[in-house]
Amino acid sequence: MKHIIIRGGRRLEGVLPVQGAKNSVLPVLAATILHPGVTVLRGCPRLSDVEASIRILRHLGCRTDWQGEELVVDTSSMSRWDIPDHLMREMRSSVIFLGAILARLGRAEMSYPGGCELGPRPIDLHLAALRKLGAAVEEKGGRLCCTGAAMEGREITLSLPSVGATENAMLAACGARGETVIVNAAREPEIVDLQNFLRSMGCAVRGAGSSTVCVVGQRATRDSVHTVMPDRIVAATYLAAVAAAGGEVELTHVDYRHLSTVTAALHEAGCRVLGGDGRIFLRSDGKLKAISPVRTAPYPGFPTDAQAILMAALLRSRGTTVFVENMFDNRYRHVDELCRMGADISVEGRVAVVTGVPRLSGAAVRCTDLRGGAALLVAGLAAEGETAIEEIQHICRGYEDPVRDLAALGGEIRWEER
Image 1 (cartoon, rainbow, N blue to C red):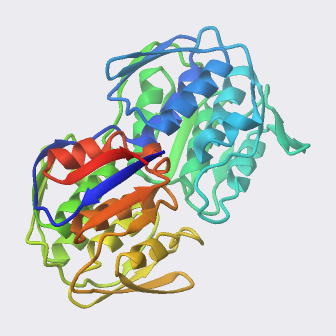
Image 2: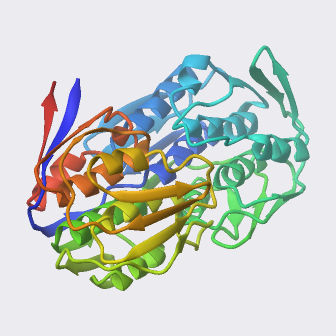
């Protein structure tokens, strides 16, 4: 079984390009089936979640082919509308195929999705949005059976700005007659990237990035070439790693505007951070200070996906930092693993209090989820001695090759079979 082995205490330095975004490419892959033709995705990251989406596409009858860093998807031969349970269980984002299949074929059948165990993440908002468009959704034997051959555009008001529900509603609305207006839509940059892709296929979508998204239902008519946006959470991970270990890094292929809350926190902690023209520069002496309370919130607030990562960067800071997790019920599962390394963290409900310690010690730890695994990478690079990280399949869901990237910055890190 593969582990990641880190010997911490080394200064990190260099220039590093940021991979394509996991949270962008997954809905884009689902959206490819709206047009019975060919899509070329440039800068598509090779992730286990991407491979899971590819397996779903192939099950549906589509063809996929890696050509270097490009993924070519041909959906002209799509013939199925069902997704079996074992494919749905591989990732939470598999539910995004529901709206796209309905828009293309007028019916869909699948089980409930799997993914990281971060507490209850019901898909009620997804189903409510589809029902608002006129789709019939029934649960039979633990499977969702949906028909939507005569969907009509409507106003859909989301009770909270769910990213997944916004994306599913956008995809389904492309197959509905008339105009759909999604109110209280998620504003994440990945929603904008999905809109850009839909437009490249000939769909009529506007408003992404604001709280109101409008979709005029019409067939996607064009083959498309789309470049996947950079992954802001991967960028945040590498910035946090350099902040914690000390050094300087220049990230390329990144939009600094997408990371404003993260870079502001790192600046407050004592790092020098500059951004512009597709780049972010960070310098740190590794001696950070505590910062004002960090409260996760929907974009443009502080991202929940960066909470564990920033926490790991501040483990050796001077003073105490309070984290308030407002998005998920079970997103402090990484805390016990960080405490194995000597961290001082107390948790009460949604609040975690991090008191900086003079030093961290390498230890045998395990990934609890994707971003918790990234936090262990950050902590391991700042710790003294050797850290062995197991159950790294979680990390592989969102990071193409963190060992390659961090080693390129001078980190003493390697894959190892144990």
